[in-house]
Structures are given as C-alpha cells and as structure tokens.
Length: 314
Length: 304
Image 1 (cartoon, one colour):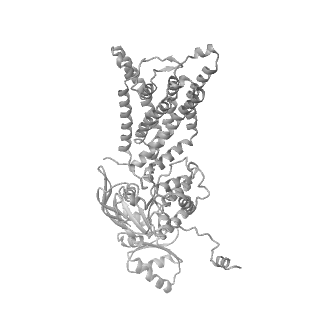
Image 2 (tube, rainbow over the protein chains, first blue to last red):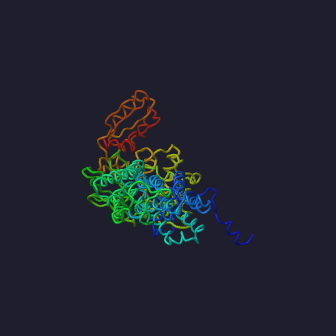
Image 3 (cartoon, each protein chain N blue to C red):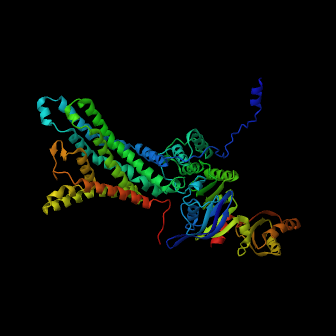
C-alpha cells in the first residue's frame, strides 16, 4: 500500500450521509441585467404552453398564404398569373400583417394577461421583491418577457416571407423596387408587439385575475374598433371626409394597421381588392401620438400599481 | 439581528401593527397570534416591503425597506404557494438563485444542495403544478434558503403538511436555528411551534402582548393559576392533602378519569413538595401533568 492510499483510507468517513444544513461560501454577485432573468423566465413559461404554439402557427399562416400567392404568380400559366395580378410586394406583406393581427392579439391575451395579475393573485411579488432587484427590474422583465414572445410570433413570419422573396424573386425588379422591405417587415412586426406588451402589462398590474385582464383588454381592442367605425361614419355624414380615415383608425387594432399602411406605403387591400372603409391613409402624426400615449399610459399604470404589498385604504 | 423600536404601521385608518418594540436574535423565534393580529405586517416590515409609519425597524443593523443589501441576506417563504405552475421545482429554485446573485456551477451545486436538504431531490424535476401541498412547502423553503440568508422569515410553513412532513419541516427549522440563522416562524399550529422553539413573540390586534421564553411568560400570568393534574389510587385523600400546601387555591376530581386537578399560584413550590407527599404516603401517584403550561394556554390566556 502506498503512502497516499494509506492517507485516503485513514480519513474517517461515517456510513451515514451528512444531510445537515450547509452554509454557502461562494460568491453572491447580483446579475447586471436582472430584468433579463425575469424576462427569460416569463417568455420561457409562455413557450411551454401548447396554446402558444397553436396561435403562433395561426399567425404564420397568412404569411404562408402570401408566399403561396407569389409562388402561383411565378409558376402559373400566363392567364392565371394575370388574374392574380402584379401587386407590389409591400401589399402582400401588408395583407398578411393585417390578417395575422387577430392571432397576435390572442397571443397577447394568453401571454400577457397573467404576467403580473398572476403574481398579484398568488402574492408572488413578495418573493420577487424580497430579492435584490428593483421594481424597475421586475416591470422591465415582465414587459420584455411578453414583448419577446409577441415579437417572435410577429417578426419571424415576416422574415420567412422575406427570405422566400429573396430566394425566389431576388434578381427581379419587383423585389429590387423595395430595398427597405426587410426593415419595413421587421418594423411592422415590432409595433404591435411593443404596444400590446405595454398595454396588457399595464392592465395586468391592476388586477388579480388574468381572465379579467384578458376580458378587459379584448374589450378595449375590439370595442375601440367598433367605436372608431361608428365615429368614422358620423364624421363622414357630417361632411368632414378628410378626417374619416384618421377617425376610423383610432381603435387599438386599427392603430397597428394605420402605422403599417404608412410603413409599407400602401392602402388597405385584401387579396388585391380594395377593402370597404376609407380609401386613404390616416394622419400619421395622430395615430403615432395615440400609439405612444397608449403605450406610455400602460407602462405608467404598471409602475404606479406594482408593489410588494397590498395597501388597504381606510 | 432584527430590532423594532416603537414601530407602528397604519393602512389608511386601519392599524396593522401598533407601537412594537422587540429584539430578535439568532435561533428560532415563533411569531404567533390570531388571524388579523398583525403577523403578516410584522413579516412585511422585516422583509422591507413596508415602511413603518412611525418608529423604526432594522434588520442586520440597517433599515430593510427597499434595501438590496438586506435583501441579499434575507430569505422569505410566504404562505401562498400556487405560483409558477409550469416550472419544475429545480427551475424555480434556480431562477430565484439567479436573482439572488448565484451564478455558474456554484449555483447548480447550491440548488442541488438545498433541494436535497428539504428532501425534494426525487421530485425536483417535476412540474410544480403537479406538486402536493407538502412538496410546495418544501420547494418554497428551498428557494428561501438557496442564497444562504442570515435571516429567514417563514410564514405558516406547516400548513397543509401531513404529520410526517410536519415533523420533517420542524426538524429542518430547528437545524437552521442551530446553524446560527435567525429564523422567524409564523404559525398557528401551536403544538408544532412548541417543538421548534420556546422563544415566542405573541401579537394580538397589532400589539405585542408578550415576548421571550414561553415558560417564563407562563409563570408571569398570575390571574390564571397553574393547573396540575395527578392520577392516584386514592384521589380524594390526595386532594385533601394537596389543599394543605401553600399556593394551592383549588382542587377538583375529574369525574371520568378520576384524576385530581389542582390550581396553584406557586408551581415551583408545589413541585418541590411533591416528592415529600409521595414519600409520606399512604397513596401512590401514578402520573402528573400540567395541561396549561404550554403555548396554547399562554396564547389563550393572553388573548382572551
């Protein structure tokens, strides 16, 4: 037996494992981007839901449809190709964008409704805010978690369609006519993700029941669309035709569409045909200001409300 | 480690905690009181989630309110446990370890260590949504311990546990106190609390009614003489003999068990004299017990 083995064998070892509490003597270094830890977790939890993948695929389908239209146009006999028309690519992108909005909204309801409301309900904020993080880290993380999921669901289909265009039409004039198509497509994907996240996180902070948050936001989203349609009809009848398009786009969903019309520089169409409603773009400054205002109000509402404890007012 | 100096907390016109002054050191301290007594307010003040309206609260020498230095050394295990159903226990503890500042391989080994300590190694890979109440309590305890805090706040950690689970968590809490942690445990299961510690803080209607050693506090409650129950072969003669002792104020015979129950204002003197009485005979004393020298009795006497 060597000396070293004798040394090892001489170490007294109990056959019973020591399961008593052990102190941690390693480093405790606060993460530089603590909000990112929360964002990653929020997004990770959302990605595990089967509903997320269903809605994400549904949001992708309109883009696949637009790609299929392009494929048919390039492959079909002359007569059918003429029937399909020679619309600009931006118009195809816009149509897919408009059709995917319902699914993005449903995704937002699924992912965002419980983002803070779930923590309020279970008082999990007590755990979060007893860690070395600030309220800003928490809110930023929650917002970023919802945003990342929505942005992925909105931007990735745009990228897929763009890559298809690049592969199949890259050397054609119709593609070269839109040098900023990639930027436009990504921008259009990010706008609803940003605004949805800000509003839904703001509402979520004020409630304890995710279902209530979802109902309220769905009401705001669809209700504002109905109200803006009625308001546009009233404005049209009163003879202010130049304001009809702007008033029509004052609903939450229409804000996205109005901004997308400006980004792609198109008028609303569906399968190439003009849609009912105003045949001009809304006032960019007004709907941009409205979008910024809604997003800011949402974030401020969340900031005002989030606290680790419930304060009872007498 | 924890110091309250005339601390009060108002919620609008409702008072949560009223002029509390106390000091909590290392070891296990039980925070007891009926529902709405102010226990949660006490815990939120210690965990820095509320600021006292008047007075001061210090934890490890600093004000804990929104103080990240204190948060690094504080672990909290709240009462509610229905969160993050989609995450596994391991992921949940890892997530909170990351927020607590642990990184890399040390984080992984520490997470495994605390999961093993709370006895959850077999179930750590399962979704929290599928956990039993007891498993949830354990995983909550693991997240509170993962960054090795000096001060640990446990809010009703025995709720929903089966008897074996209660015994195990009781042992865990005791071992944390023995390891030098300052553990404040809020619970309404007084019998279990008594197994963890004798040091109590009793709160009722926002006021601190008593603090210190349970038996010392019991000894100070004069208006309720100590009850002592004795079983004997000749209970009537024993009762008559015991009535001769100083401090004994009453005696009665239990109709069913036949035991003698006396009330005395001097329990120490009574216990000193008891061997003499037994030795003098002519009766045997088979057993004796003190049914109100416990936490439940102290709690009842101080809050009634």
